[in-house]
Length: 183
Ligand code: SF4
Image 1: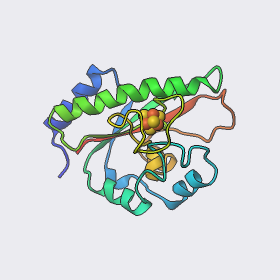
Image 2: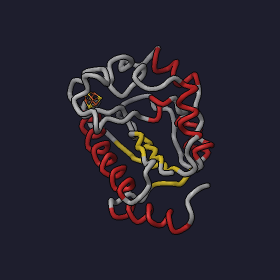
Image 3: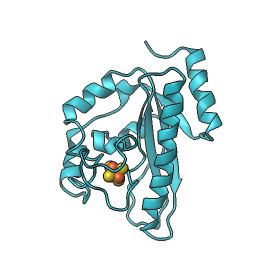
Image 4: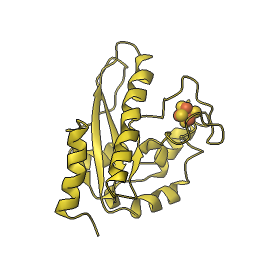
């Protein structure tokens, strides 16, 4: 069973307190998990095998699907970013992801024991990622991005009412999405 109105309000108060206003609730059963997303990680992404919170460190696609099916309520958080230079993205992502870990903690300590945060970008906490969970510099803080959990972010966020487009250059505005699995 999903959260009742009072429980949702409790989470929304935490979001407000942490200055998150651009978000939407979603039914985790509607989060689309696809093999093509993992294929794009394996072939085409330079972080495959080099990120401690990226595939192949994340579960297999079928297990990712099972993970989302265990939840009844989640929040999709939207972040907009416009970079002067491509290198700025790392610092920008690290700052936001750091706050997202704190958000997960706040929701967890409010009594939502399943609270689990999926970052809005790859982990980015370290300048050079060690590339594995075993050697991760911040194992308590690192979380996967939705894409690392094989989420088709484009279709999922569009059906939730957000706008997202394929970008062709770094100087275009980025729309990034984090998923807070609540209950
Ligand atoms: S905390 Fe550092 S080592 Fe661990 S996954 Fe993130 S960037 Fe990689």
